[in-house]
Amino acid sequence: MEQKFPLPPFTYEKAVQKVQMAEDAWNTQDPEKVSKAYTVDSEWRNRSTFLNGREAIVKFLTTKWENEHQYKLKKELWAYTDNRIAVRFEYEYHNNEGQWFRAYGNENWEFDENGLMQKRYASINDVPIREEDRRL
Image (cartoon, rainbow, N blue to C red; front, side, top):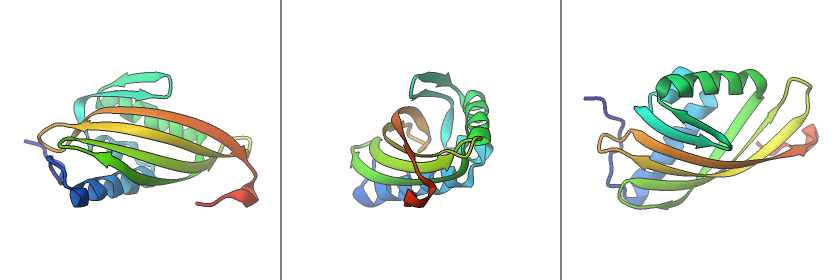
């Protein structure tokens, strides 16, 4: 049985660890590595895109990082319960034309008993920034 520690139910320490692990994985910009944190049938909403399953996650993230260069993400624990975690985040990147952006958002996560994320709902807003205004 595939497991991704720490497992629910979450304590504050376990929730913080789970958030840091997600941040670290996403900052690798490796779609295969990131997808391993999700159930094979994981349900996603990312902005207005709806996805199901690891294959769709890998395809989505591959396209994302082909268009978001020098991507850097920071996540922060917002709240947690037994098998759910809410985070706020921001990330910065530039597009193919060289325009920099800072994206702000919130995610709601639900985990199965094996510590794999079975649901991820993300709301994200992008703000154009100047390169010299980068923080991350």
